[in-house]
Amino acid sequence: MRPLILSLSLLLAWLFSGQAAAIDVYEFQNPEQEALYQQLTKELRCLVCQNQNLADSDAGLAKDLKDQVAEFVIAGQDAETIKQYMVERYGDFVDYDPPMNASTLFLWFSPLVVFILGAVILIYNIRKRHD
Amino acid sequence: MKKILFAVIPLLVFFGLLLLLFINLSTHSEVLPSPLIGKPVPAFEHPTLYTGELKTQEDFLGQPWLLNVFGSWCPSCQVEHPLVTALANSKQIKVVGLNWKDEPQDAKAWLQRWGDPYHEILVDYEGDTAINLGVYGAPETFLIDANGVIVHKISGVLTPQNIQEQIIPKIKEMQP
Image (cartoon, rainbow over all chains, first blue to last red; front, side, top):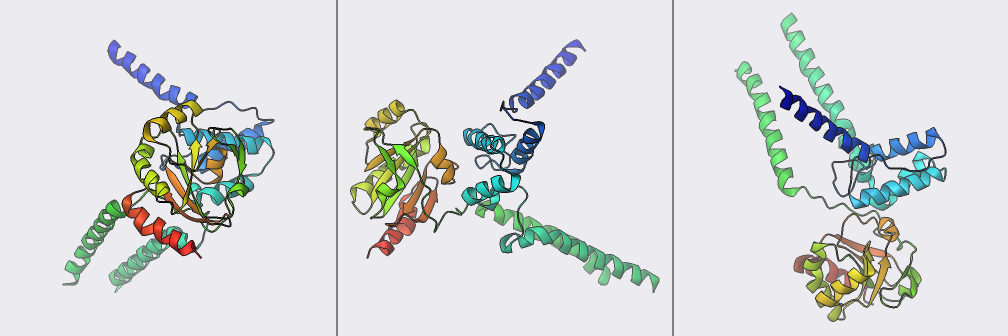
């Protein structure tokens, strides 16, 4: 039993150490800035490991981009400006909250289409059962 | 009859989805279209690798050029290096290197070993210009026209194929 507990606690320690290492030290002027930084690095994609956000990534480029975001946040830029900066350089793909435009129309509306399709089938079946 | 049809529909949807995912498996690419095509090269000021002389984007106006982002730490850069060399030696275009996040002495040793075909090498030690160019991995290559506008970008290694099919035709288009 003991070895099991020990290995489990080691596993937990390892899991959380990763979390701790992901927090970088920046000199934010107030908690709002830090919150904005956290929000932005969660919403921006790491371009190197494309299924991770900046906050979770340890890639060299992610570090550079986090530094850049922190620098802008400390300089008092708002979320919109910082995101715009990234999108201008890396395209819409960098933003985990993609804007609505011609190329993302399917992305935004496909759930609605599936929902309507489901509703139509449901109504059809219910009516049939009533008849 | 109708019952069978309704039973078959989910199955068809399932196989349709399977097919879609299978197609995506072979066509999906991590290469992103650059939003910078058609836009001017972002302003920069970098020292050159050997002389340390500061160069800006304006120093490259007047003729088309190729900006090749590389680093001695990047194995793929080594793979494409013979092609970069061939392109530079062919005199079809001026090839400029952007040494990205590299130690100058490492870069020099790397160039000594593999050859230095570059017309000029700019040192982007901090990686600022790389970010401004939307670089997300080395190597990346930008084709820039005489007015300093980015015409084309290749993310990843240059290959005989993408040089023949993309770079060379674009260079020819730019010639007066």
